[in-house]
Length: 365
Ligand SMILES: Nc1ncnc2c1ncn2[C@@H]1O[C@H](COP(=O)(O)OP(=O)(O)OP(=O)(O)O)[C@@H](O)[C@H]1O
Image 1: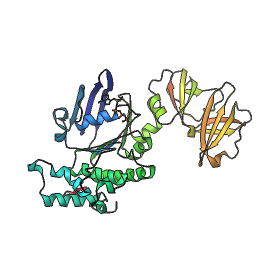
Image 2: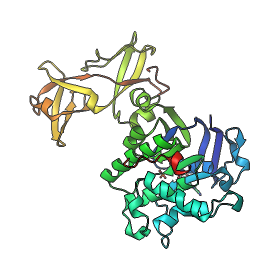
Image 3: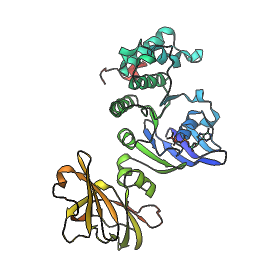
Image 4: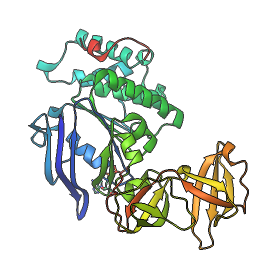
């Protein structure tokens, strides 16, 4: 166990921003803090970094009480969305900065620093940028350099706050893969903040979903994707179709919906809510079905099918375009969810469930 966060609380004036955070981060783990704006992700990151202090709770690293340590003593690498590099310094000097300001006993000599920076530049595949100034770099290149600067001090924990937030989609994707590769080679314990689901799921070993200052769920990406633990997580992860159902002997029933593909659940008889992703609902032409297609919209590869029954219940399904050739507006369709999540009424917990071969070790050898 490396980083242990216990019962952490923080308020700003009367507003509680963190309301009892408990999280243990293993050595070498890559954790994503995922949540909507204002859920407290940055505040938590700042407290870990030593840039802010909690009102209550604990924070330790390998048993050492970090709340008794300054930011510098914690040896943390930080990368922010707009972490301005020093504009008057070249990339090489920016990366060397963290090493050159170390206390004397701990500081390599000039040749040692130059050697380390050279190896790090190669490792991060930014050798060609070494003599440029930040103004001569693209956004993606700047963030690679910012990561290099954060890593030069061999941080015990690397903290990234929306590091790719300001970049366009393709660059973000490239940087994600690059970051994952860097992490896999170095094994630096890493926590990054994002509100981008795809980014969190592609990059992280474990995703921590935050909402209103609390952790709603923490787990492996596929675990969270397949089994959201709360209605909030379900909605946040795209299970946006909510259907009132009646539970009977573990099966969900709803008029006009074929729910036979859903497995039995250990949920008491009575009212419940079924949460579905539009992509998990199959609309099948059926003259006897109570739902009718009201609208078909193409988004390119996909068709969005809106359906409605006489009682006014509206359900949206999303299917690959090639699967929708037989569907027409006005046509009766049976709706068949293939998977979904059920929460008892009241919304409590669900019953269901690189180009160069230099490694960082070599870079610092
Ligand atoms: N120094 C401060 N003083 C007062 N309120 C603050 C301060 N810092 C943050 N807050 C408030 O605390 C709440 C949580 O902010 P925080 O930045 O931690 O959320 P976040 O999840 O990182 O959001 P975002 O994704 O928008 O960055 C917000 O309502 C914010 O306005």
